[in-house]
Picture 1 (tube, rainbow, N blue to C red):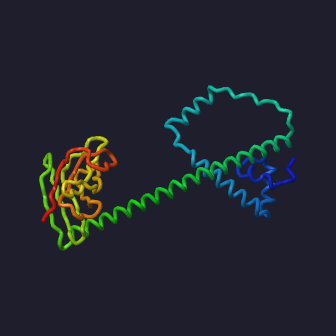
Picture 2: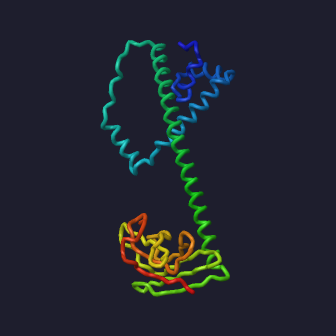
Picture 3: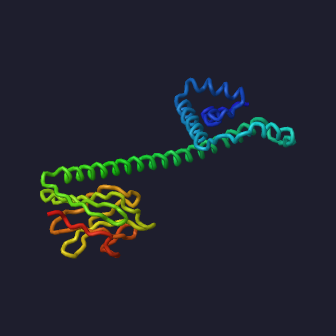
Length: 250
């Protein structure tokens, strides 16, 4: 028996859950029903996406294992049921429609979450690229300034540090070569030294032993720069003795 409301079969059709006579009747109906055609396309796409979302690569030897188990597992005897054919169709269509509704909701949530995550990753990447470009431009501007002056000193363990200052740009750059990595959970923090008063000038990258860093903020009245070891994230004021103090070139 074929249901009189063929519109309700779009979900079961997309899942290939219709019997031959139902499928033939629905396909004839589908040719003249744009609403059902649209539903079938959407249900089919959703089912495909859900399949891709949970797809996994079969384990090596999986086929041989399945074939071996076939001979060992006894097939269950089909349970007898008093339902007639029309009732079975109705229940199958009911479950198919419920499954498709759940699938649509799950796909919407999953795809929406993926879209948000991808958008956030793209935004983070653009922000990071923007920061890198600005830092490179500031570094180049200081090093290429006509009045740029530099001073190089030896640091601990054979490392070398160079400070470059441009009075016209009121900025300073620190170039490190061969510095030891800070202890775990620590970071090198840079400071402007204004007659013994330390002003935060930013953090160095703890993963790099050689790097060029534009000191954060203007030189203003500072006559030197200092380097201390601070907790990750930095400190408002130095919490350890300076690793090095570099007087600015005159």
